[in-house]
Length: 199
Ligand SMILES: [Zn+2]
Figure 1 (cartoon, rainbow, N blue to C red):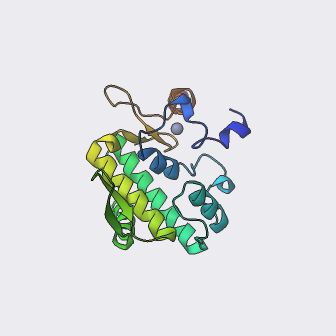
Figure 2: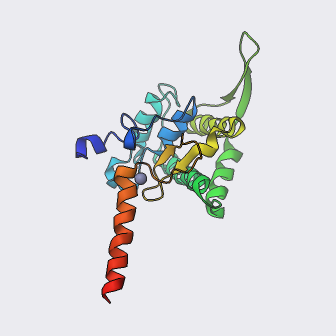
């Protein structure tokens, strides 16, 4: 894959051409995929306060004029990695206690209200703006996706921990894209076996 395309992963491009997660979960998926540890650190879309402010504004997670500080951006990155631990756990195992503590801390500070529209339909809405409002929106999506059952299909790639939506019938997908990460994992196992055999 060319560098120009790699920079678009998580936004315009999904590895393996997978469709994104359904409904509002797509926004949470994009948030987790604002960075990936396989990509250069400076590509992190919320790596600095100005970048985080631009990204959150573009996604309407904050209003025009809301400011994001470096401390806000650092907390958002911490929350992102904790949410990544949840999607990795959706593939296998339990999330680490540290990740749960980070998410509980964010939830403790998040204020959500129940909004009612003209038809009487309900929606979770953040009660504040700025970074706390963005966090509240993201946690509201997490809650909704757990109620709908969609969350269980949100997985962290076994190789690169990219958050992908598993539409397979038996929910057994382990890699963001077989052509990228599946083969890398297999090649690594192959070389390790060969090295072992040569001793
Ligand atoms: Zn991957």
